[in-house]
Image 1 (cartoon, protein in one colour):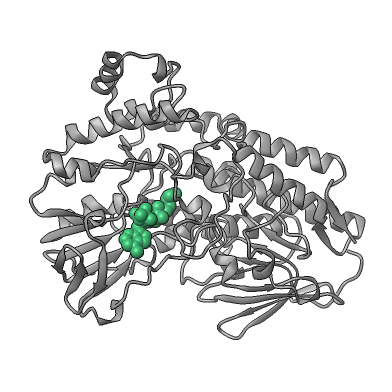
Image 2 (tube, rainbow, N blue to C red):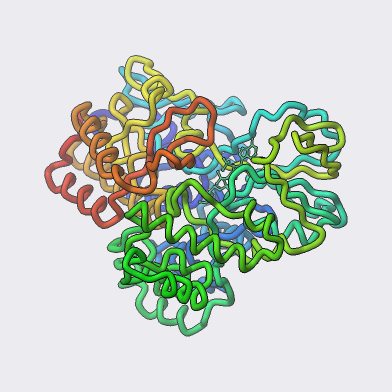
Length: 540
Ligand code: NA7
């Protein structure tokens, strides 16, 4: 390094989820000292917090796992095609032990601020618990879906029963058996937990504001032969992941990933479309080449989807309430489920279609809606996250001249490659806005980013640089490029209110945040930038 300012540690990593754990291991291996600060009292990030009944990853286990250690991937055995939360939490705990990470992880430590010192060229990171760490580098491994969205429904504190949030689910037995449970939210979390809560409850009321496109996961035990095949050739499998659009190769027996077909739905007859429903059920909606890119084709696919809802849900009015309309398939992250629609055929499950009368307030004994009052013992919020920018917005991050990141991002996040922000030297974001991140496999994206950051740190050490940050021009051009390639995709359809564009949080600027060009194009561009002597980055 150019000089050696007094620091406690080379790198402060914020977050002990999948990115933070690997970052600690990787930076250590490269000869940097690092400490991880984690708000929770366990490791695993998403898979520590989201322990609600039915929580399950929507990426197959073999693909949703680290590739950095051949020993790790040889010794770990996955049990299901799609891993459930307990198995993932065990995996990340195993990683923490296996690589002796715990001695440098501070649990129960919530970061409140990170401030750059222009003169010393160091960061001071402060925590709610009163610690202060001075470091050369800060790596925000804070996760794109880590801050719960808690809707401002009046009366929440008056409820005398139990209030739960799927993304902050307490450990242990909560005694939900035989209770009247109200579930608010039908995104991925709500859809996953519906059948599980229905099985526990005396009666489950599902409060739905917007119906969801969700597809059967066809989950089941992982075929030992498929696992063996991956173990025989992990190197190639991992390489293929990085050469696949979403970082998921589809070679794990996960049927859902083999959905898009060769034929155009616009060229098929009505009979052929319905024959596809007979053959493939819900998957028929996406079994075509044009549904993802042509709005007219998309609507035809959506009609096949609704046909399947009608075939699955016995009561026609209920089926209509559960049928998504007016926004395209693919504008939100696809949800996968186990027996979601079938659950609504149970006598002890009621859908409360909020489009027929919304929630007015929470009362001492339940939820008051324009359609009447629902008496409840438990209210479960499955209301999503302040996605992609929420975690950083809650930390007072100040860069050069004390400039707050909150101000820089007031009109939406601006980054170079989703890795760095101009004016915030030596601050890195893992899977930040402007990178593929949430559009694909987070483990693949996170490993790629951590490796990139590690290589950048080594580059700086070798050349004696003290700071790195993007130029304004490079950042502006990248933000423009990210916006440009999103044009014409379903993600930014005006009818689509997704967390990808921040539409789920009142007052949040409507900006499409991820990079939609796919991992291969992204990785190629990043490599090209490094080969061009870190084009767009300024070192001092
Ligand atoms: P999502 O996908 O953001 O879903 C949140 C759900 O909560 C959605 O159905 C919302 O309805 C609903 N919601 C939010 N606020 C309210 C209020 N005030 N009243 C009624 N309903 C409300 O979050 P998830 O946790 O399910 O999934 C997030 C990602 O995690 C997912 O994409 C996977 O990648 C993993 P809305 O649609 O806004 O009308």
